[in-house]
Length: 135
Image (cartoon, rainbow, N blue to C red; front, side, top):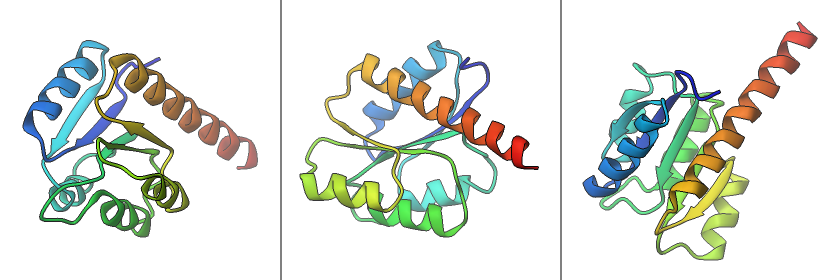
């Protein structure tokens, strides 16, 4: 099912991008990487991601919540999976209210990442089927 699904991976830590990128590519996903929210927003013009993996804390900013807001303001419907090692429950709640699909705690387990991405892709498939039925 992963096939050629496009993942946009946004994290300020290069080692996390390397590790996650390698994991996702080994599972057959196409991966685009951005080191911060601004480059992620620029990449959205070139890449049409099926899922976005977005870090919460990316100094100096914009942070993950701001980036998520801007992604949604642009009408991007792709599920956004937030990631953080220092998240408070309030951050997770805010992220979900802003339209995040899921919130993953760092350190990330490969299984949790893959299960969450597959669930997000399943959501995309269901949304597409619903649109087709209503068309």
